[in-house]
Amino acid sequence: QVQLVESGGGSVQPGGSLRLSCVASGSIISPNVLGWYRQAPGKERELVAVISRGGLTNYADSVKGRFTISRDNAKNTVYLQMNSLKPEDTAVYYCNAGLSRFAAGDAWGQGTQVTVSS
Image 1: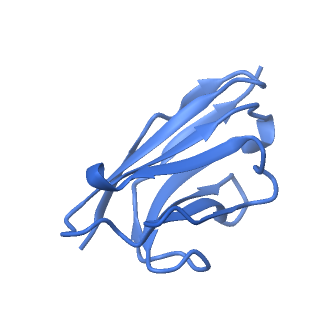
Image 2: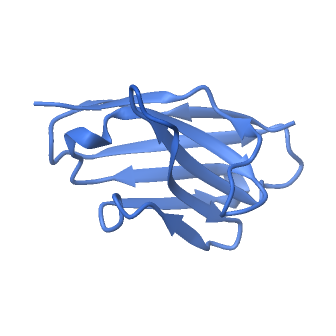
């Protein structure tokens, strides 16, 4: 079973940047798809970005052009570079591992808080 551990959350002013990292362990090979989802208070969890082992990506429309997902298969690590952050990006960000870019997998990290506020 894959275990996921996120890091890199925090508080930042609007327009600022943060980089999230997630390390996957417990799997012999790097998971097929790694990604980031987020959940804001009172809202459902939503896709932010996912990336396949081969580098194919999906992004939510709300983050296109501002966020970049990448991964290092040798390190079983996925990153989310978040630029031009907005208050509406405030949420708990969860790392996810699965088989498809079009549906969340069963493995989730514990979540890391991102707060964008002046």
